[in-house]
Image 1: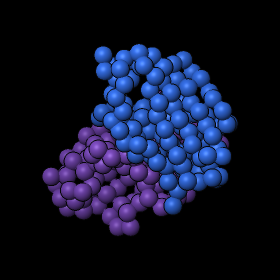
Image 2: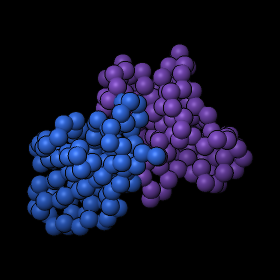
Image 3: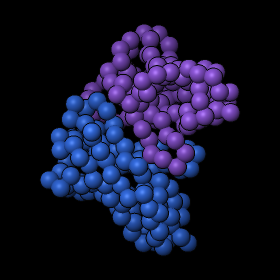
Image 4: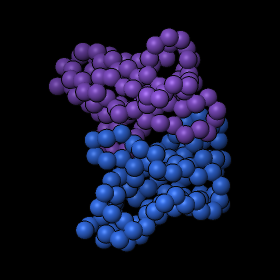
Length: 111
Length: 114
């Protein structure tokens, strides 16, 4: 059973702070990793994807991947109230077929 | 380029009725995925289809649920004899043919069983 684990939160951070969201996965052969943001009552929206070990930056977002530790994280710098949402970590299996989602972490950014 | 289109967006069914949810993938995408999200829970994989082919249905309940993606037309997720526990958001997603590609979600279909 392939599993993707996230702390459900809520994670509460003050406006302007760095929010750190973490995710672990069980399938060591996983190759592709994605972060989606989902506002209440809306569909998931892709924020970032990462394939290689290390960091990948896009604006205020940085994804970090450590395949040896089977760990992927998302950092949000200068957090804004509009970043308040549920963040879903997703992993594509080794065959490249299926996206498995974690349960999501609810982020609350307080003004 | 239109995104993934799902309809209906909201559907109300009485217990025992059938629900049909439709999904048209993005242009150029030949892979379709269905996910279910129960209230306050994460996304659960249901089924992965290519045209006229079910690739992985490991997340589909054994009874009452079926999915198809015909050569022509949208993908259909069909739920027969709905029960209250089927009330959820059903999200369709699509991706291009190459493995490991990003998948993009539709707006979802919210099923309420009364």
